[in-house]
Amino acid sequence: MNREQLIAEIKSKKSLLCVGLDTDMDKLPEGVERSMAGMLLFNQSIIEATAPYAVAYKINTAFYEQYGAEGWQCMAETLKFIPHNCLSIADAKRGDIGNTSSMYARAFFKNMNFDAITVAPYMGEDSLKPFLEFEGKWVICLGLTSNAGSKDFQMLKYEGKYLYESVMETVCTWGNDNNLMFVTGATKASDLKALRAQFPQHFFLVPGVGAQGGTVKDVCDNALTDFGGLLINASRSILYAGKGNDYIEKAREEAIKLQAECASALSSL
Image (cartoon, rainbow, N blue to C red; front, top):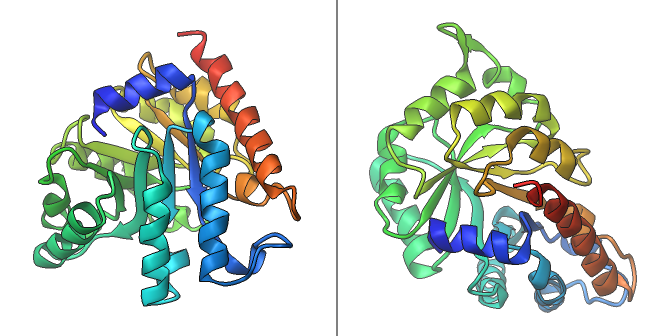
């Protein structure tokens, strides 16, 4: 999915919603078998319930990789359920020396055919370049994350700037706004406004809405652009909205609520 297609989908659905498929087998609702088959059925149900209201889906690969080959198979089968008009994101946070990153890029872009992958920029340009070389794919680079530990490095000052600002500025010289996005946490909404001013044309993938305390309104107030410019991720608040046989309907209701909040923000454009 290219930039124009993503923007068109945002405008068509009046939504910025990205559904995170961080599926935890131990948290599957009552009535769903706690097995790989149960996880897959759960994922399919969540995707089908939320697809009219979402523009992207983010599969957190760690929740699947822990199960070895069976987990990878579940992830591959889950990917097939994601509609083609929604951006598919491998939340894998890869990043290694060039030849290793080339193998990661092939795995997720060529073999599994994800539209996008999250990456860590710490090892520098040669670790991200193999991902950026894939035509029609997106690299989503960690920028300012929402976890408590982000202060350990990201918030350090470096030559008068926060380290995350310097990292994002440098990474922008390796890609462009057609193949590069940034992860910017919703729980740091006060910093989003400054980041948006610095990076007006790049999409931001924004985790932290819902269970982590971030709100759609705060994110949109600080970082919405005339083309949308945001993918607002919600995972646990959708996945585990229902605890029993009502989990599909509850997930749909939460997606509808978040989409409505997105639509309200987009209506001002």
